[in-house]
Image (cartoon, rainbow, N blue to C red):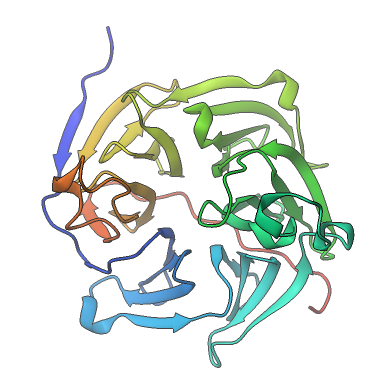
Length: 321
């Protein structure tokens, strides 16, 4: 028998931010603050978990960022996965500087494709996560606001010495990434496949065995795809399914055990902030077909789900950036 599904419903947003592409919610537990990004509008937002739109602090950046993470032993700076590579954002000044670029010299040259954009010019970061050893994994993808290409994405890994490695090429829309509690398997989402896969992972070398991947979760709604996810303290997953207006709680067997209904379709990523689940979203892509989804597209939502998240790993940097 399939497990009984607990159902939640959110009818209005916490923050009606009108993001074009809200992503990357992150709970800063030491200050009880939530940060998140708007990839398309090139913004980084901070807000107290108990706050409102009036207490939202926004940094307008020159480049988009898709993912952020904390740095071990460094409270003033964040490490980010951004448009050109890995960067450092300084809280006190609002400055963003690059410490390791994604693309090599050849990829910065014209290659005869994509409306004249170089590979560097037509790509952006989308999502990321840090493993138990403090390595920062960031997935890149073709920027759909610029080109129609969909298969040039690369999953990168930044190590403590700031060396960069291409872990997987030929991905389309890399999204939610995480690891099992034993760090011997890795979950990875390439959204157009409609699945999250689980593959063996060598914790010491940081190498997944892609050829042994198995499907862990498939989006149950036609036209929907898994986007970002987070893990909770009971070993379950909260998975945002873009295009469905749903976030699902899934057990370790990949079975749905809870469902959150939201008032907009394009939900992107959840993050557990204490016991409150914060969920970002994007603006409605087809407002004529889905008029009900337009008003709160790009808003941020939250709901108390009664379970805390797994503590997030911090980037471990062994050299000065």
